[in-house]
Length: 503
Image (cartoon, rainbow, N blue to C red):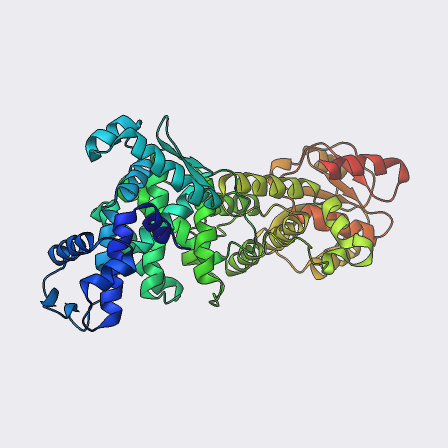
């Protein structure tokens, strides 16, 4: 049963007037006053009074034709419906006006309502008691002292959404300037997202947003709502965040996080049947916290990521599938998760920086919670590849085995790592200790040396796979701790290496 039908059961006279108008509209022939009295279960005099009241409330172009011995007939334009008249009657009932006052929170006691409506307190008590019998199933009740609507905020908003929609009361309840802002923005979003909302859907979306804004301004907030992939997609999130930005610009207010999540669930029912494509940058940049995350990760990578298509695609996928409950076991987890664990171990510092960035993003974001092992590792691998392509590392090569060995080692390093690598060479140990280490990132030596101001990788007697792995990591590090000495091939020095890697 609709909300308006419940209201009509409470408002007996209005209900009888609606029955009379509906009968006249459906009969389309003469209708005797006596039959009206029988159908409405009222006296003939009451039936006549109802007909007179109906005649006086009809809009221009409508009339009640009367003929002796025949009765009455409704005359109306062929292209018009009785629905608008019924809706206006319902909005004029005392029950509707009480509910509207409860929605607006503009009345605190029944005495005030009784005085303004010329109704007795006992009559109001009876109406409220009867209304609560019907509305309790919708999760709301009307409190008498103080007078207010009680229930979960989500249920209250849903109830009034149906009430205002069924009575077409949106323009009566909400300011025109607010509705104009919402309607204009919904139209803009429709063009951007290509959702092609129907006229009815646009009205529903506008009404629900207006209700949320009004209640939020009254400090009536939604309780905690956990975002799920079933309730949120990119285009929905874009619409919510974009509209929130519009509110900040035009009204100086913004919806709290839980309000945005609640709206996203409402929007989802209108967008779930539509296919939405992947976001481009113009849409993904509206995601709250995205600029912060892109800037932070860009600082780690040493470049601006906001125009990097690979970064946008990666973020797009992570945002789209942020809440998958059963994370797909992809290449990161093959072979007893060796690759996953290797990334965590080899790039521990970078992993921690990325993980912290994701945590900070999740705190800012109303919709998305993307911090997960898989997402962090994928971003680490991406940043490593960015650093590999961007950075030209300055390496100091200390070799004491002659020029042939020097040339061989340089060719080997450049062939192995395929990157810009500026290699500087010293031949004498004294030159090594007096070298300005601020000009290099790390040192490669083919013999044991003392402690230096930059990390040292000792390759002796020949470069091994482990050596190459260590050099690879040094090439992608953005920050190095000074004073560490790494000798891969001596077991006694491995503890030092592990400590370095952990930091």
